[in-house]
Amino acid sequence: MKRLLTIFGAIALLLLLQSVMSVGSFAEPLDFASLDFITQEAGDDYNDSVSGAFKGLKRFYGFTGFANATAGNFIMILIGIIFIYLGIKYDYEPLLLIPIGAGVIIGNVPFVAGNQTGIYESGSVLNYLYFGVVKGIYPPLIFLGIGAMTDFSSLIANPKLMLLGAAAQIGVFATFLGALYLGFNLPEAGAIGIIGGADGPTAIFLSSKLANGVNILADGTTVKNLIGPIAIAAYSYMALVPVIQPPLMRLLISKEDRKIKMKPPRAVSQKEKMIFPVVALLLTTFISPSALPLLGMLFFGNLLKESGRTERLADTARTKLIDIVTILLGVTVGASTQADIFITKDSLLIFGLGAVSFVIATMGGLLFAKFMNRFLKGNNKINPLIGAAGVSAVPDSARVVHAEALKSDPHNYLLMHAMAPNVSGVIGSAIAAGIILSFLS
Image 1 (cartoon, rainbow, N blue to C red):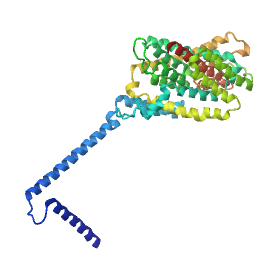
Image 2 (image 1 turned 180 degrees about the vertical axis):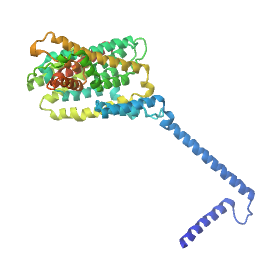
Image 3 (image 1 turned 90 degrees about the vertical axis):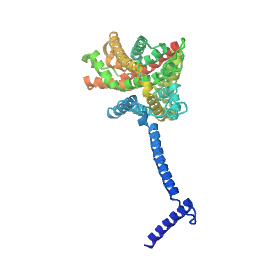
Image 4 (image 1 turned 60 degrees about the horizontal axis):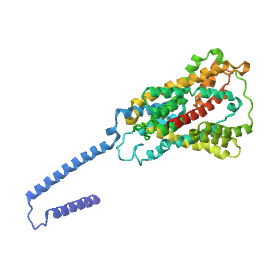
């Protein structure tokens, strides 16, 4: 009770002191008119505070994503969620689709321009990370990791299967012609064409050189920035290999041919494995010098793997390094698909061309494998299914071929045979990219 009285007494004393300081000394009579003025002034201050609070809330709302969102942002966010769903639910290239899907969501959260937030705003963190895409830094590092993971034994043991990887590149040049027909200029068409190789890093590398929104043509026009649509299309169709290829295999290859058993490949010595990356590097880069950043890193990574003296470096390249680069590449490529830049007529055309090119590339490999069998006898015949692995979606295409063969014959194992055209498809798409770059850059 005493504490309550003490508290109330202190409050009363403070109020008395405030009144004295506000009104004046007790010796002067109270001016009730001035008291009314003070009350009115206090009311005005209250109204101004409320008005200021509402203005502050309104300004805060203007800075939120809710105020700046467009229908395109929500469409792209939904696409990002679908990518993540496909990666998690159906295991479609999760190491690629999940980072890309997350990047799509990040890139389409609405932001206030000028705050150095967006991926295309100079000085933003995302813009710095995107530098590796624009300048083609990430793709060679990806190829380094791929080289350190790849066993070229099946290709060394049966070199003629390299022709299947070359045959699948028909998709690249068919897409190039299709892009020209649809109105894209030469550099843009060249960058779009490489989607037919079903090789994401190569597609990013070539588009960063040809369709980067920076290069100026002879007539003074600037090429369009198509890196985002091209990369997303390439990786999307790589992830959809298990969906697209099996129906084409069953359509073009008879059940009898699908049951063909290939003889086991010969054993490849360690010396051959060490010599191969050096010889292949020289041959391929002399044919297509512009592909040196990709092919050089691919065969360098393989040499680290096969030399027997650099296992630590090879392990870093095929694990930690490629994982880090995959994260950065996936997120930044996804974030580059801002709705105002990505949802265009050109993007839709690129996706359509990508689908057609992937079908053509798969069909090219399958039909060429059937053609090769006309010149092969007995147990030298090849199972035409492995022609579908000529696209460079490593190793998913080879796995799909193997799974399809097992459906026709549970004892027909084609995985190692299919890896030969699969890895040659990687080499072939890089060579094709270098040739295109040489002519169109």
